[in-house]
Image (cartoon, rainbow, N blue to C red):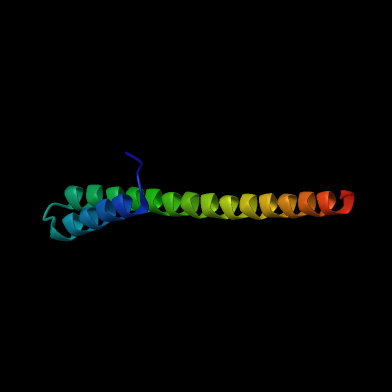
Length: 78
């Protein structure tokens, strides 16, 4: 299963809620640390997805430009 932003964000929200409800300080701190970690993973996941989309867009544009250049070259030869 690929981890997604939504998965990490949900875990962060659960940890934040658990921290709010905790009566013991050490439990609160543990859940706050967990929330921080889950949020970092969520941010990293979102950035990776954004970077993948950007790369795919660039590749598609490059393929399109190559196809147009090839079509022009063939039209010039004919």
